[in-house]
Image 1: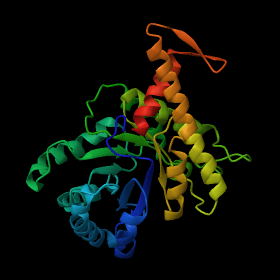
Image 2: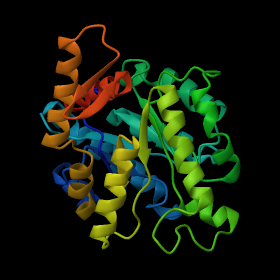
Image 3: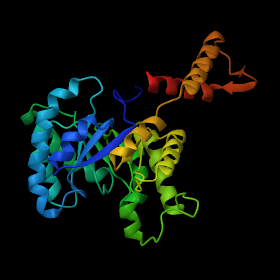
Length: 301
């Protein structure tokens, strides 16, 4: 599936200290399950959550080879706290597919985590370099203005799977009394962050993952923002509640109409090699349309 071997439409958070919720995680329908050791776990429960998460990952590891099984990731605690080191040491034996890094301050800050992973992966039977990273890149003002650095290529990041962002922490950090306007659209600061994440991810050749829709009861709003995200060029979206997963998956799945049009464009150019622009159903299509069609078909394959 394009740059990713597996679907990455829906990224569902599950608390790492809840055995009941973890037990339900494989059946939620999410493409990626993120076991959360950060915001969803109270400070006094962190140590227990690490053990619960490791044991659960070890138990489900055999199921990862089953067709349709989700990827299992872990959200560790921020790199500017001592907790992240303990998180990684504890859960790496469970061989998570990747780690989400909250409050990421820029590519340079990830270096310590990358060095640690290269050191401990072989000890845990993991091929060096196979644990991927998804930084949450917008949760402080300094982090938000450093987002473009991920796409500049100044720091090698072969583990980088994508970029994602969040509005809640940033809102608190800048003292914003609102995040969306009266029409439900992001206000300027958040719209800028979102667009920067999208462009930087594409510049870096990794997945752009849109932030969550906080009101899980607002199904109509979720469908709208998820479809907007798909049409804007995001590869997937974070989910905060199991009921959101099916709507996100639907929004990020190309329709038969879209696929048929993409095939028609590809076939048209294949039948006319060397052509710069061609007519299809009364409209002109050119090379950018061909590239977009090829990407869509690769995504669906």
